[in-house]
Image (cartoon, rainbow, N blue to C red; front, side, top):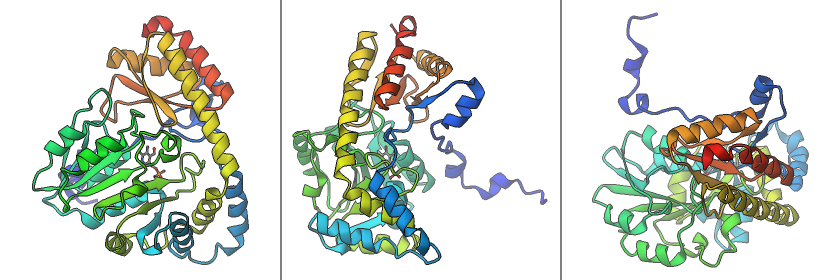
Length: 369
Ligand SMILES: Cc1ncc(COP(=O)(O)O)c(C=O)c1O
């Protein structure tokens, strides 16, 4: 070993980042507590993976000795589905994989990133790891404050990140709000519209489908991790102007997404029955959670995604609630790492899991009221 401290190799902005901590694995909690646990912490699909995707993965196994083709097949299918050219589409290892490419491709040292406070943690970590200035604007009633964001754009702003629906609040901004906001965004600023929860919100008439915003400076990101139940295979996609995609493709790892991921994504897109079942189950879960938690006196933010955010009276109360739910085998997501220490996020589960969660919460009524 040399005497040089390892920290000297690490830029200050990397040292300052708190590593991403995923929701606790079920097996770990079950081993620790000796009871069956349910995980409502990571906005996964409780029905499991799309069956058609599983079938496609099996079929693609014999070709695993060959390198993948960089997502070409999925890009072709998506281009056709959305009436675009293949040059407007990128596929990657989850939408976070593409986010990472956007940051590496377009951000220079002096550039700034602008978004809301407590934005999706994955984006926070990626942007901060680039070492550029990361600026935020507070929520207004748990929604993006788009007028305030517009007023914070300066000469150095290069990327604005908007998740719609937003994680962790579950709220959306409307088409009208986005149109107003867009008028104030200079063409030199890139807007990332992260639509990881698009499918859950798309039937709400207030929701702006960003496929209708094919502006030169807007990149839409979507994923197969949520409604299609494919978080473990890592597959996501993006739409943008061909010149943006062309440059992203220079930076993207040439062999992502994997062969299995691409096959799963293509098949999942055709799995209408699974999509429908997933949406129905989620709508019932959202209704049950919102009503039951409110009856206990908890502030539940109205959600358009597959989770609800609960705003508790204090960070201590949120921490205690998370602990007490865990004792009963319910794993939820405390939001301290996002920047909201008095909040927790609960993903919808199967009907049975949701019921168990509500019962567990009822036993903690004294704690939350
Ligand atoms: C807003 C948002 N964007 C992106 C992602 C990550 O998606 P992927 O699994 O495609 O990387 C998530 C996952 O939680 C998310 O909540």
